[in-house]
Image (cartoon, rainbow, N blue to C red; front, side):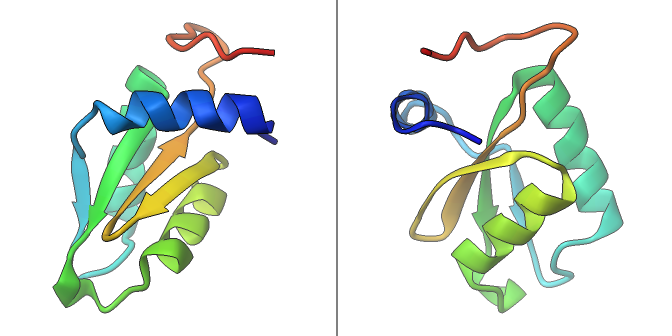
Length: 97
């Protein structure tokens, strides 16, 4: 579970990043989750865009995806949301305590 200071730190980092994947009309698929897990392992912080034709609510999709990949929901703004998952073997982000 992220603390307030940690979430704020991740939000600031996410502000500078571009989304690297998107949820389309197929919705949240196994292929999407697999791709997202790979991206989280490599980056730890990933921004996702929910396309209009998906028919999904951004926050609901974000919480479902975070639960599916065992990550942490960071924020949702408009049609984009950010997920964080710590890589214990090779950490990239040093969170504040």
